[in-house]
Image 1 (tube, helix red, strand yellow):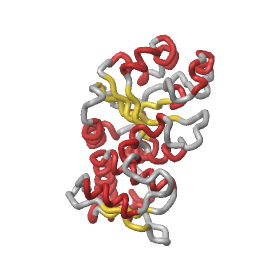
Image 2 (cartoon, one colour; image 1 turned 180 degrees about the horizontal axis):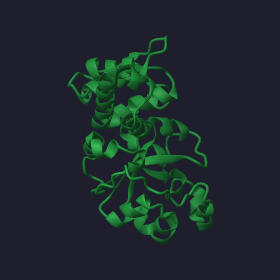
Image 3 (cartoon, helix red, strand yellow; image 1 turned 180 degrees about the vertical axis):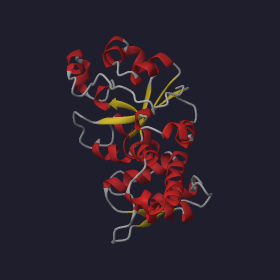
Amino acid sequence: MLATPFFDAIRPILRRLPVDRWPDISQLNAIAIADKIHNFAGKPLRFEPADTTSSSAMAYETRIATTGEIPTRQNWHDIFNALQRLAFPQTKSTISQMHADLLRQGGNHEARFRSVPRDVLTMFDESGIIVASEDASLLALVRDFQWKTLFIERREETKAKLCFFLVGHGLLEKSLSPFIGMTAKAVLLNTDRNANLDAQVADWLGDSRNLVSARNLAPLPLLGIPGWDARNTNPAFYDNTGYFRSGYTRDHTAQQLPA
């Protein structure tokens, strides 16, 4: 079930956990300790059983930022969140710290009415994908919704030169049963696939200019990626314009920074 490309980004962590059952919190913590993973403030990261009572966004994010403790339930959503934190610790610590900072600055209003920067952070946290390539022209095709050019005309280049790492824990959960409509929110990195992508994404999310509009995250229909769905070997698969959309008019707040 987890052998598909959807889970390649967290596969190094999956290999360190049992394959026949839920990982327990002690096993998750053993990896966090071994890898010396910490939160933004340098506190050791620890997974803890979640309280049975509901917790506010402010309480949840503040707890992570101040103590390094991650409330974790035994369900797919929280397990994928834990795996995401272990596989991309710098990215996740940056997301948590920025949430906590924005909540502290905005108080109850920010907690009740999530601001645009927190929307962007949440979108990437839940549905993010890292797209990396040294070929800026391929990244531009993703940014410009040129799906047929990218996935049909330049398919072999896409397979050879573009790397896709699904990291959003909400979308990882949905990937257990993939369906037409699954669309990730991409951070595009003009870099080598062997670079420290975790650090680069953390830097991208830590730049406030990237958080002024959700349109700075490039929509990417996951089932169009070569090898991610058997049907996409047929060029007609990309004729579904309801899924492979032609784009949108960018608003004046969207800062198109270099890839």
